[in-house]
Length: 430
Ligand code: HEC
Ligand code: HEC
Image (cartoon, rainbow, N blue to C red; front, side, top):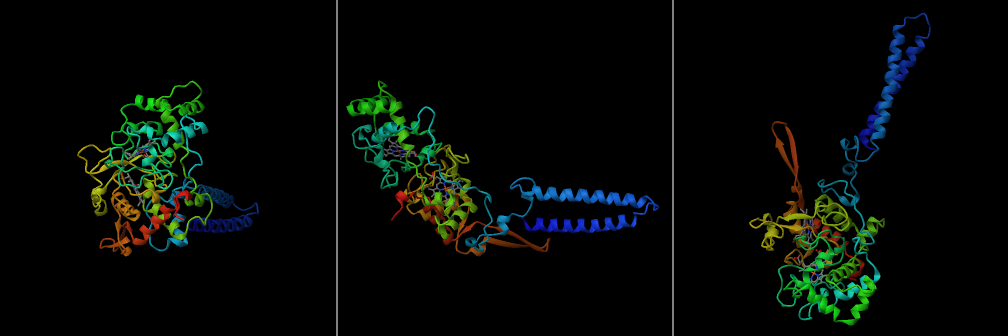
């Protein structure tokens, strides 16, 4: 129980004890029936007062046990009064206090018209790896999304398709894309099925002339007939819709609910070391969770808080301006100073660099510095004494204290250590 509340209850109980004693003395003295009735009246009023006051105390004590409701928000926050050991005395008290961390579900949700079945997944995997989906038979989905060694990306700043010329944007990982409600850096696709129709026709990626041309390629390969029959039923024609349904079903199996972070929130306190735990808390208190929220660390997920897009305010920060992050504006209207982008997932982020829509940042620490300064208006400095700025107020003859977001080198390191805990064991550097 809260310290202030205990004090309140103690004083209350002392007052009840005092009043009860007074009442008993009064009533005892008044027991003789010959005495006047006025004091009886006083005694009865006091008695009612004690009962009413006791009921009030019981109500206060009961209400205060409901977290986040009733009067609890008015009372001092226990999270603030009892810092954990690794928190130190850095004085961070910004950001949402009661953020609830959750593990990734063990299964990705699938739309009603495309349930994930083993036959469809097997067919989808084959299509994902097949260069027949590209005009000159040189590029498959996996060329840009290597789901093994490259954690679902190509590890290039921007992707290279059939033309051999680097395209405009970085290839994000396909791992855990199954949890995203919006796909692509600018979020222009609303499902994996819709997304998978993009690359085959993109002249810079796979360069096929039409969906019909893709269907003909797949039909021409006899072994695909059985694969489609197994997945969609005998006699069903091979169509672009079924091709993308199979690919999407396969992508829904590319999920990583096995990161140290997941083990930690499921109850293994050893899963994260001290630096990672501190980084996790900074990720919350500094405000990263405002955008990278929920179990997939993205507001654009099918799970967790919904907040798909955010401006990338790179123009206001020295770190942001270094990396040419405002040339491509994403969803923002032309003429806007900064771009607007889908908030990407940070799962496996330590293994999926280079970073941002243009792949301009190779170092994850630098990516965190860009985010902290442009998105949260924080400063990067080791002079952490500057976090609290006392200003003397002559009127009040007292201090006003403002708190500034200043991240030290250690803070950035710890946030990066935490981001490392979002890496699945399968990509962990041994
Ligand atoms: C030439 C490289 C290349 C090829 C081939 C390619 N992609 Fe991509 N993929 C990209 C790039 C680049 C993006 C981001 C484009 C953008 O946001 O504008 C992307 C985005 C995606 C996304 C969205 C991920 C997210 O988090 O939003 C998925 C899913 C995806 N690709 C799956 C596929 C599939 C399935 C195929 C095969 C049909 C494929 N890709 C072929 C480069 C490629
Ligand atoms: C206001 C919303 C917002 C906040 C707050 C925010 N981010 Fe981001 N973050 C984004 C957006 C949008 C992008 C995508 C930018 C782009 O298009 O290149 C992004 C991208 C990233 C990336 C690169 C991901 C990749 O795959 O390339 C990292 C890493 C990242 N954020 C970490 C953080 C950290 C750490 C914090 C807290 C210090 C933070 N972000 C705070 C919105 C936010």
